[in-house]
Image (cartoon, rainbow, N blue to C red; front, side, top):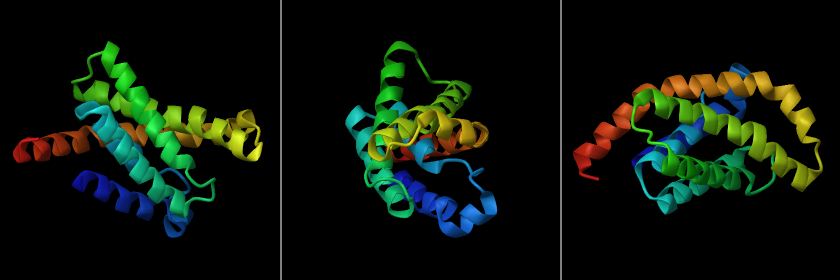
Length: 161
């Protein structure tokens, strides 16, 4: 629970108006980072609940449709749970690749489709305009996942969860 709250606060700082001017979208995605960790280490309902809560916080500062990021993060959690049923992800690099894939799935697939449904925006145009930013954000998130997942695993192990 502490990781979810910390990710929410960090996301508000990284995605808020001041950081948007400084970082221009190239910051790692702490919300996806924690949602993937929850999906890898807990039950599906906990990962979906954490993703929904974090998406709800992100929706508060974004200009997108209400509930859009909450839905995207729940879909990311379900996608990671589906992948972990068929592939064992217990190494740091495979978890980092999963975080990278989750960022791309959320920003290149789920959110543009959601914007098409809600606002009628052409998803191909949105992807074309922002694909390089999404890839850089995915790489930064994957690199950040290596130390963060180790820290979160240690914290969860100390608490006996």
